[in-house]
Figure 1 (cartoon, one colour):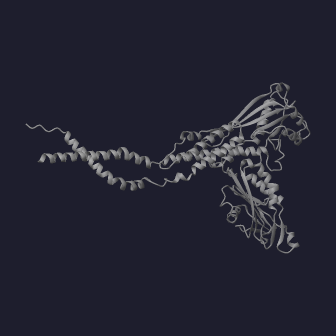
Figure 2 (figure 1 turned 90 degrees about the vertical axis):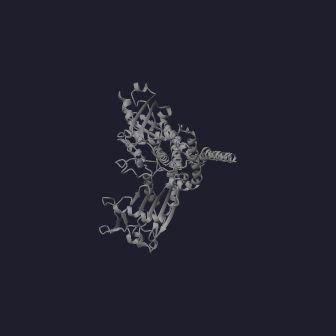
Figure 3 (figure 1 turned 120 degrees about the vertical axis):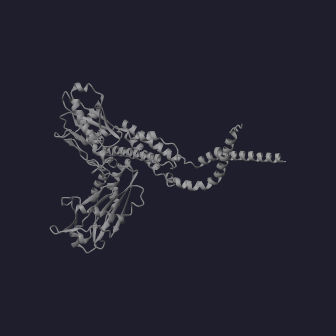
Length: 555
């Protein structure tokens, strides 16, 4: 009677073992991989090796220079050697991880008939007009004309001339080393019109260490796709002054031509406003000697903050905002003058703040108070005001006066307030700045994603990273080929894609989800199921091990 019961018990034991093994197999083979796959952090692959290689990127900025020799500008033996090409390359000594080399590719050739005719005219203006008619020069390229040593086209005490377009003129020389002497003059002129150490140092000011380069080079605005310019009239005493300004006409006559010439560097929007009872945050001091009030140089930084709270333009702006303030002082503090560090009055009675804008103090003519009752009608001289604001605008964009060679004639910019080669020089600087910014952003992103493994990397983020890396490489290639316009466009794309990837909101979803929270969630779920399975597997293992033992032999 015991045998059937024992057999049934053994069968149940076998079934129990099989069931435990089955559940364990399902949990390990199917459940665990499925749970791992469904809960893993998705991370699209990124070009980490290419990003790390960007730190060792060497920029070669190639400036195509066409050197045109007129008759009798160099000895006839040298004329027979034309045309040929000479390359002048030097490294820009900046303390930056990205090595930058400037390459001037000089293509020597003889002057064409219409060029000979133009350079034989009586004035440079007539010559430039005739030379500009046949063809348009590419962005970033220069043309230098070599005229005879005793030509009357330039004043006799001048050795070179830099025009408002991409052209320059240097004097030749009748010497056996004529090409070497003229070549050095051409390089001096080309450097003044294109790339200098100061221009690149100002562009890379945010990426350079705090040294002599970056201490006074943080004035220019950072590169951006667009800029907003706001002109504000501050009238703190409307009971005494009825101020009128033709800002629309001034913007149309003076500002818009300058911004149109600068449109290649970004998009611009201009607006204006009038603020009443807006006073400065600093009380002017009275000067008994001149019976006037003044603002000392050390107090100027304290003027901006109180006024800025009234402007309200930068809070809702996506782009950098430039503020230009015209301040008409109240009657109690008139006239008001700005002093420099030496205590002397500033000629323009204005000052500017880097990457913010400028403020000009406009004093009312004292005779106006005697001629009429209050409030006095004040008509603002917009030509005087815009002359100051345009000069400040040039400084804020890093368009400083060029470092001219010795005995070089420069008539100044055109009526737009900007020469063509100054725009090219700005594009060179912006291209280098964009590449440095994109490289830094991509490197920081790669380091961040490498250190924190639970950040999700979506496919669109990865595509932006790939696009940014490709744009950096393309911009570097275009710069090395001398294609400035396409290089600047690619550098803008690199910055846009890199920042879009870096600031993507999806990168923060799991950033603050530490491992201890994962354990707190999954342990209550898996522990009740895992304990019986583990105990069953241990019991099966012990019983199997016991059954494998051979019985001891008994004598």
